Structure formats: C-alpha cells, structure tokens
Image (cartoon, rainbow, N blue to C red; front, side, top):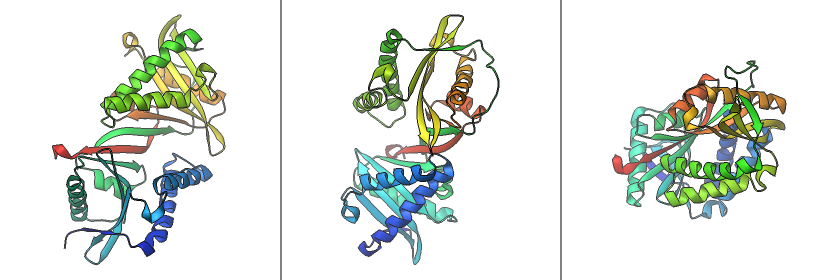
Length: 316
C-alpha cells in the first residue's frame, strides 16, 4: 500500500503540539540559530501565530504519514498565496527512499489538486530526515542563514580598508539603494512577486531603521580605501542567549571595486567590530543564487544553520 496522509485525530492534537514544540525548540538550539530561552520564546510565538485556534485553525492541515500499519511521522501544511508551505515535516530518522518518493508524490498531488504550483520548506542544519526528503527532487535553495561562532582573531585585513561611520547625507542614498536592491533580490530568489518584494523590503527597512541613523542597535558604515568609498556595511547589534550578537544586514561592494578583495576585507572588519562590542558570534542571510558570496562566507568559517527551499511544480 502506498504512503497515505491521514488527518490527525482531534484527541491527538495536544500530544502532537507538545511534540512539535519540543522538536522545533531542539532543532533551533542544535543548529545554533537560537539558544536557550530564546529558542523557547520564538517557537511559542511561532505556534501561537500559526495556530491561533489550535486544532480548529482553518489555514493549517496536520496529517499523519502512514505506510500501511507503520506510522512514519507527521506533516503540518499551510496553503497561502499559491504556495503550499510544509511548515513542519517530522519523519523518523531512518526512512526508505521508496517512502520518500511516495510521500513527495502524495504532497505534489495535493498541491496540484488545490491549484498550488509551488512548495516551500525551511530546514535546519540538523534535520537529517527533512534534508533527505528535499535532496534530488528539484528544490532550489532560496536563502540561507549562516553563523560564525566563535568570532576568530585573524589580525589585520589584507586590504588597506577603513570603516567610517555613515553620514546623514550618505544615509539618504544608501537607504533608497538598499531597499531597492533587497526587493530585487527577493524577486530573484523566487519567493516574491515584484509588488510583494517592494512591500516586504519597505517593511523591513522601516522595522530595522525607524529612526534612520539614530536607530537603536544599528551601526552603518562606509568602507573606504585611500579616502575613496568602495562599499557599505550595515550591522545590527542583537542579543543571543543574553550575549551580544552581530547580524550583517547589508554588505555591498561598489560595482567598480569588485574582485579586488574588498568584500573579504569588509567581512574581516566586521569581525573586528564584533569583538569591539563583545559579540561572540556573527550571523547573516544570503540568497541561494549568490554563489560568490556563499563561497566567501564559507571560506571564512561561516556554517549553514537554516536553509529555505522552494520547488516550482509546473516544471516537474
């Protein structure tokens, strides 16, 4: 008998929610993306937001994955905006390839039946079973969260680069350029339409920089070499398990200054800034299509802690 997706019985919802909560907390903590009580608080907020009415939440579908009499795990799905979100795929660790193939076929059939053409799933670095489901099925990596921990002491940069606090005059142009560039990257990642990307980029800028250069916890720099600007760097100073954490919100080398080592020099300068504020870790987000940046970050010791994948079923 092929794999079946069976709606979760009402009397099992509380058990499922408790197990899912524990699993999501564990995955965040094991991957390092969140630690301690931060992971607990984030997961509790996540479950409250997506399951406001508990089992009766109409936007969610929670099913058991069964192969005959064998229960292989659970799947939590949500459909929105033409996308079927696989919110949590909880599989037993050792699972046959046949099962994965049949599970994918069942999910794809459900999506097409509801006129949904795209699948989306986020996976943490330690989710072995989830990664086995994604591999070899045409999923594209839309984005990656990366972490460098601990912050190394590498000495001076190889390029004569200096970070200078951004001026109000430069900020006005930077804010417009950064918002436009982020929107373009969102579209290129395949996650947003042009209108959605502009709205999301504008929202993110307003959230992070409500008071412009004076926004709390934000440090913005221009990178200069011999008095000439070669790039810009935007760092957010965050809290991670009670300790300072630096998150790279934007790093950009001017087009005419690329392939001269300035990007690496700016990353090393970021490490210096992290040590200055007492941060023991640095995080960043990179779009999956940006191969050059990914190679740079991994070469500096950053590791992947979370990846978001999407699949266009119309191409299958």
